[in-house]
Length: 240
Image (cartoon, rainbow, N blue to C red; front, side, top):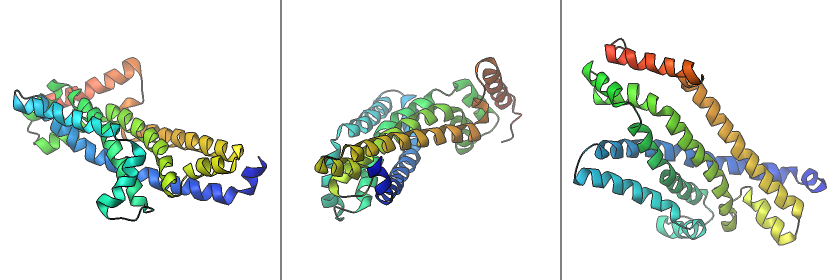
């Protein structure tokens, strides 16, 4: 406790740095994964080469997560021509890992949308863009939210690896604590990393409830709301 009180500036600086390194990869990986998931979903619904291509994209994306994080962080400066201490290396690496986790979730989320609702949207004159943003994307929201929550927790954890390269974040408390044999510093780094992951996860859940109000209820009520929305699309009550 004495160590924590005597090093609040160091702790807060690394915590803020950790947050700023975590948020961009989470957002960027989500934005990039949704169109990848949409493409895979479209290809899966076809036959032959197209279907196989869709499955291959998902497999390749998932395999990216198997890249060892520390060697990847070390290799990026040479690939990008950046300084090894540049935070952009961490952001790009974590974005790649985020896509590896999120691409499959995005594809599964879009696949899970009721084909009848999609067909009804086409029947009432929705263009492909309108159909995606007004029908498929909202209905895929809960599964997409589950996927981005996994990405968020993974990203917050992996940011700590950047400390091995000298990039400031909560991982510094772990490496410095190990070097100096200060257990309080190590424990502080671990606890704050866990707390930060839980906070971001909680904020994502709250955001999901705000932008997807139809998911707030459970059981019969929630199912009734979703059925009513689907029925409106089928009958053309939702304007194109």
